[in-house]
Image (spheres, one colour):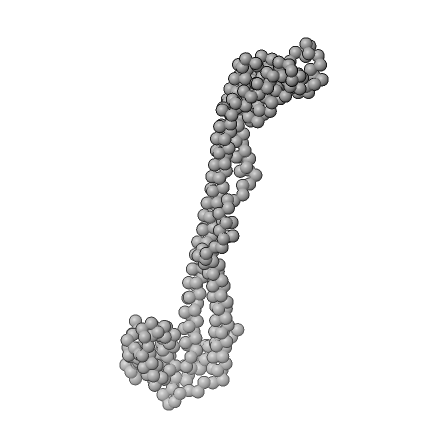
Length: 341
């Protein structure tokens, strides 16, 4: 359809040039071809305006989405969800677990070893500092399934065999429980195991428990810091995405503004030129408008006035000394307080 329009326009231009000679006698009546060409121009303009309207609607939707994300107040549920730290993936959890395991192993190798040495130095510890002689107590294995002693615990701790303090605690309780399992409550070893367990709990609370609390606090701090870094990175990525969307929107709006300006000019060219009396009446009406309304109105009518002046510029140039129609437009607008650059 655009190719046919160009051909029609060329033919109409040729016909208009041929009819310029007769313009001095009287205004040429538009031919049927001129009317069809004008109808096609109007149709194309309507189609372009419809397409431009759809693009403007899309830009408005994107603008609302960006504004809702950046400016609209969040609900309480949305704020709580935003304040909640992001979840950690498997690799991040393994990293935190590895750091905590190293700290716990260090507590087991230092503070727990100090507790074991304190137990072995107790006056009641001699029955428990070495493994039970099964050749002397032949039925020992019938009562005790997992033998344990402080000496074996000390060697294991020195060699780094304990991965965490909980393992040391479990072996110490095993020593005391084995002693009470094999011996009767009336026997001395039973009593000695009870006294040693109380002493063990005291030393554990003094040496190991504070370290465990410190390590738990450090582990929580590391996890919180990692979650905060992830949340900050997510917010930064969202801000970048919003900025990119705003840049795309600004570019789209600039393009739409340019297209709209072109369509305004094309629409003005499709209109019939204003006669002198109509321009006088329009100028008088514009003169009575406030400044802001005047500027908005001129933005609509100026292309039409310019088209009217340019379309008759050649016809009246000789009679008016070169540019009478444009001068008429300037005079009309000068009455409103504005001129044409």
